Image 1 (cartoon, rainbow, N blue to C red):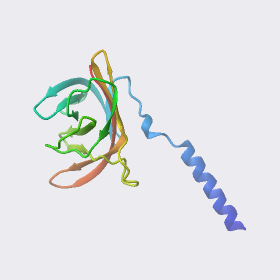
Image 2 (cartoon, one colour):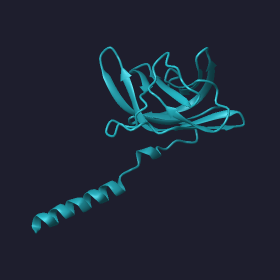
Image 3 (cartoon, rainbow, N blue to C red):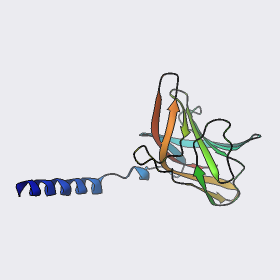
Image 4 (tube, helix red, strand yellow):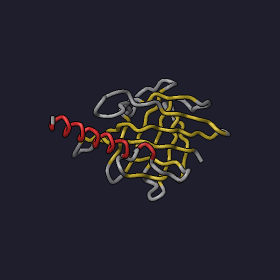
Length: 167
């Protein structure tokens, strides 16, 4: 019977621990756009649009270093509120009208790319990104998901989330 009580006590402690655990999805930001890679958070202070023959790209540059850039790739410019499926993204990947590809450039570490996967435990598809339009400006809310970084020295996956608010 003492094994039962010890097991029950351990279970109750675990439940309390997880109930009190900080929710990583509620990272603070000051109404500015931001993104986070693992535990590092970046505040967006400048945005820009780029059109090329294959994509509409909405970029957000970070305040501490304008070389740190979040780029959201669409097939064409979003014109209405909608949800976009986050896909595995590398250069020259064709996107459909309801898909988004994500890249984050951090010169000191490399380029992170969306994988289309929520996390490395469940391997479920990444949650959709919410796109909203207000007075012609685009806002994209990107839920927490896995990104991948490949360099000449290593391959790694890192959790990512953010909000890009066009200025």
